Length: 179
Image 1 (cartoon, helix red, strand yellow):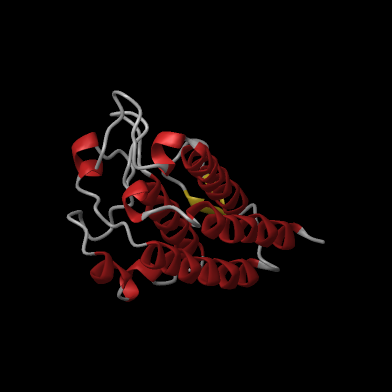
Image 2 (cartoon, rainbow, N blue to C red):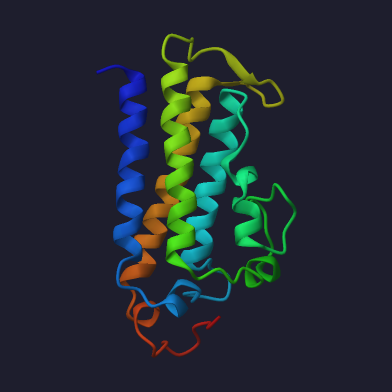
């Protein structure tokens, strides 16, 4: 097994776990927040996709999956390349997509492209600089690991939220925010 195979395995684990985390959740649960400053499950799924899509597509100079009709299907009140980074709570409040099929369909398409990008990386140096605007400059390998780190943290947040009774049920705990 080489590094590309390891990266593929990490991304595939996220792709396999996301549907399990959404399974059985009512649509309104996808938009519930555990706290006024927390992000709902649906927003986190979208953000995982946007993070992976934007950064992995750039590695191989590809068009983001988002720009192949998904942006229009989501019809979000954000800029065309917004991925959720640094959004205010008011911006997160405007996220209203609670369709698990749409959320998971987008991520599945992103995952497919990620696997293609990783295959294209095979044989290239993972030490090559892909973003010189950072200090130290970001290499291809560091970028891939950063994406994996980000999306697995958010997957863990989803798993935590999924297990909270106030997110899973129609009866929120006192003080919890409803969509």
